Length: 407
Image (cartoon, rainbow, N blue to C red; front, side, top):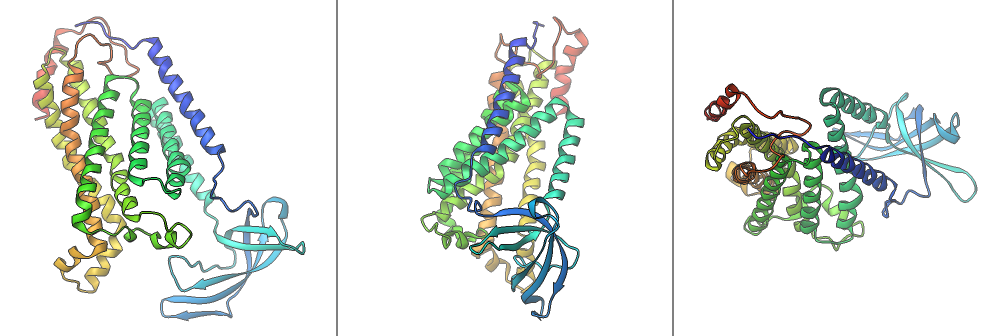
């Protein structure tokens, strides 16, 4: 077997790529949000010390009216000061918050014309718990996966910041949602796969396979949107967005973009799974032919797709669980339910996303068969691994066994 190794220069390229993404994260954090209207306000943490519910009325399951609150500021320049404010409930359970004495809340305040301070309770204070949860997640990821876990965490924050600081503002400015989403998903897929998988053939195959799956999902979503008569207003807060000064937005295009954005993570997962498996087969059996490797990829892909498609169904169904319960509780006919706008939109999202997953596997297997069996490259081994000049006869005999075992 020919000698294969990861060169020091390639390691430097990977480190350089990590540093570039760290710089991108810092820049995105610093860039101001042009839609942020909170420059005239400040925020801090407070505690409810007294609640007056005399104006709060109960109407069945909902409450309406006002709570009169006494809030003590716990942090910042106003620490220790006590203010009175109110909390208005409009009868919408998903928006209202019923506060009690002792609750920790997030407080917005500003100085008005006469020099007095206006205080408003935004909601319960959750940032501390959210940061704790994220910290525990990051620590566990790094402890388990080491430097790869750190790179995974970096890819997570990069994705979050790009979506919030780049994609969402571009949407609000009226750019085509489908084109913007495809460009950003492609860029993030490239960054995440090469960051985690390294600059290897494994990363290259995973990237091409993933992008192929995303492209298929995009084409299918565009093809089936008209036959489904889908109205993008089924998305949460869609009408609120239109009435907030953004009536120029195309909700249907936003809905289509959301389809392949939602499935892109699972598509990326399948692409990397197939690529890593095929690379390992080649590593154990370097003399395998392109055709044999392709069918090995197909066999691995069948198993991966079989579970991943169900995973996608679980992920989507969890989002509209109460919708299904409401239809069943009201005794809605199944065929009528399948024709309703809300339900048919979820069918479109789930099925089109699953199509992308199913087709990603064979596309990755085909691409990988040609890329991995190409001779003369040092990129046939997993990143951060060095292999000696030869492999004994027993290791070479494992190649056919692997091909049979994945059947």
